[in-house]
Image 1 (cartoon, rainbow, N blue to C red):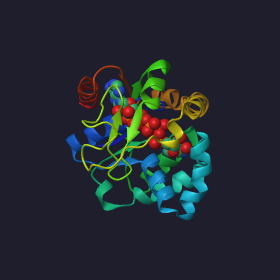
Image 2: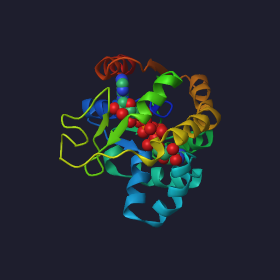
Image 3: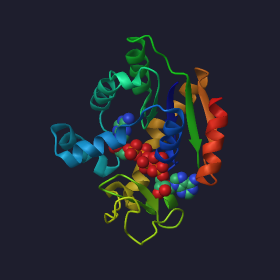
Length: 213
Ligand code: AP5
């Protein structure tokens, strides 16, 4: 299946995409993770993207479309993929259709996680991540066993630069302005399935599974 997961910052896209990709044996492709990887590797791409990400703005379309196009050429995406964080603008959505058409593919479904703004702010400002293995925690909703330490690899957890409250508010405004129109775009194309993103991680995973069957 060729799937996209949409939703505002903090809606749980990364959490749910990881579970769904594992359940369906398809690659989980997160443009946010790819960009953060480039920033921490200090590549030209990372240097170009960092200034936008730190402000909570979108990285320019041509940059993100380029890395996604390259990723979707890989053979592991032939029998399915789950895109998380891409597309984020209508122009990216149109490019995605064109990239897929080049290899006779087309999207099957776009999952849209629906969560109210107050909950998004709580989730983002409480998020902590492992800089070594990428595991994600929340100080209240899914804390690590030992405070500040990754359960999986023992590394000290950190807060993402863009999870500071002022940057979170900017990201939410950018979502409303530039990414929310995608919901209407995919509704019109008949591909949209909106899923209530409030509840336990397992409850939402079950709703996502129901939506794709
Ligand atoms: P990206 O990494 O994609 O960030 P985002 O869309 O803002 O999404 P998040 O990762 O913040 O949240 P999420 O929805 O994945 O939630 P999560 O599962 O982690 O992008 C970062 C930046 O990169 C962008 O701002 C932009 O600059 C750039 N970028 C990326 N893609 C781009 C593109 N296509 N075009 C241009 N620029 C691009 O969960 C959040 C927290 O909530 C966690 O702590 C988690 O434990 C907790 N949580 C999860 N589920 C629940 C639950 N059910 N109940 C309670 N807590 C929960």
